[in-house]
Structure formats: structure tokens, C-alpha cells
Image (cartoon, rainbow, N blue to C red; front, top):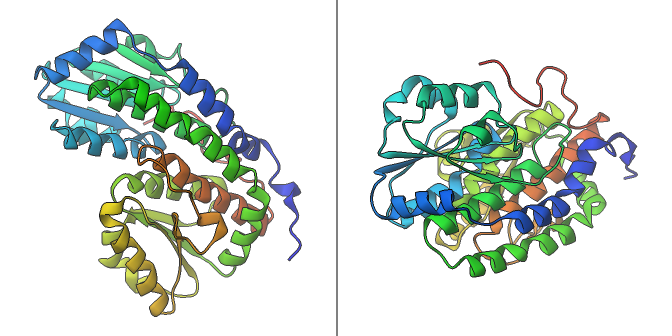
Length: 349
């Protein structure tokens, strides 16, 4: 099948291909400050009874790996969308709460309200791409990503946020930061290598997605980040129905929707539940459904990822979904990622 790539070779694609540069620049900029190290010390000494992880959209989904890491370290971590936090969970704004807030712009309506509602009651760590934003300026400590200007749909701001959050994990959990940096350095070449074959990936996915009318993206554990963000960017970039959820939740109802018009992308994820996820693919195919795996055992070249350290996997997992957004756009003959109703920064609640 001859593919006309001209429709998709625009600013959104350029942002996707700029991700290795964005990751390298962000990694080079990461470090520690006295304010950040002080908060980490207070957390480990028991001064904070809970850590509230908050964001909206892809910034919220990016927090899944950190939530698991903090809980496994013995801390009490809670993921709450910022819009819900400021209206329904505002009793959490106390001295014994540490807030980690993620926002690429640092100035969305929800983040501005968060700063007003908290009123410096809880210590706040910001992860943002915008140094001059209200979030960065009002935070007790800030980690800045170096994604640069982004056209529309979150891609390089998302992967750099994941990188920054993994670094923050290392700081808060008192890991060897030299080793953390070594682990994260491996991801930039892996992302570059995957994206070097983007045309082949898009072409193979167009064949896979023919006749699809809706897409499910499912996974477990840290892969919930890619499932949630993946569904969001498919809808944003292509105006195409997509839903992200856990692999277990998919069996509790949505499995009934299996047909030739449904395409299920399953993230194999961590070793702990990998067999469960791979079994889901086999079960879907046994019911004549259409499913593909993302991971080292994928049959689909666009879904095949190298074996990497668990801290890097969430960044690599979003790449096949980005290829899906390009494939759908090429199939539909539309420019991906150009907003018609939404805006890059959400300024109204």
C-alpha cells in the first residue's frame, strides 16, 4: 500500500522526532538543590504523612510510576487529579502533606487554583516545562524539563516529565543518583533508534488499523501511564475514539465489545504481571478479536521494544502509540495534532 506521508509531516511529527534531543537536554539539566534535598530529608524523617501526586491529562498519567515507587519505599502516596484535589480533597492541604504537582505549562486553570487553595500550607514540588510559570515560581522546589516549545499534543513534554519524575523518585527515595543517571542515559539512544524507523512503523500500523472504529489501550502497573496518556493523545491528535484502562478492567465489561472494528493494544509491562497481559492478547485473538502487544515479545515491529531497566520502560511504551496517531492521521488524510476546539494551555475550569 502506497502511503502519502505529506499530510502528517508537520509540526506534531517534528515534536515527536525531537524527543531524543528533549530527553538529553532534560537529563543534562537535572540536579539537586538545597530546597529539594531538604524536602526529601523531611519526607524520610516522617514529617510528611502522605505524598499527594497531582496533575491533569498526560501530566496526571505520568505519575503512575512514581506512585508505585513511593508506596514500595514505604511512603503513603495518593494520585488525585488537580481539579478534584482543589474542590473535593482540599482538607489534604496541611503541613503533613507533601504535594508533587506536574504541569507542562505550570499555568493551567487547575494549577493556578491549586496554588490559591494550598496557600503554602503543604510543601510543594513542581515538575514543569515553564520556568516563569506560577507553578514554578510558587513551588518550594522545582524540577524543570527542557522540552522546549511544543506544537499541541503532549509528546516531548510527556516523556521529559517521566524522566524528571524518575529523577525525583531517586532523590526522595535516597537512591544513588549517579546510578539513576546511568540508567536514564540509556533511554535517549533507545528512543532515537526506535524513531529512526518511524515511516516503517507507521506503514505497518496502517495495515493493522484498517477497519478499526475504536481503540483500547490497556496495561498494569507503570504501564497505566502509557494506557492513559495513549488514549488521550489518540483522541487529541486524530479525533478518534480511544479508551485507556487497566488490563483487568478490560476483562470486566469492555471485553464484550470485541469485534473486527475494535483494536486492543496491550502493554506487556513489568515482569510481575507480564504473563497476565500476554494471556489477554491470546484470549482476545481466540475470540477472533484484534490485539497486539507492546513489549519485547511483540509480533508487531512497531510494538517491539528492547529489554530495558524498568525506570525507562514507561518512556519507550508511549512511542508505539505516537506511531498509531500518525498512522490514523495518514489513513484519514488529516494533519495530526492540530487543535480545533481545545488549546495547548487549558485556562478555564
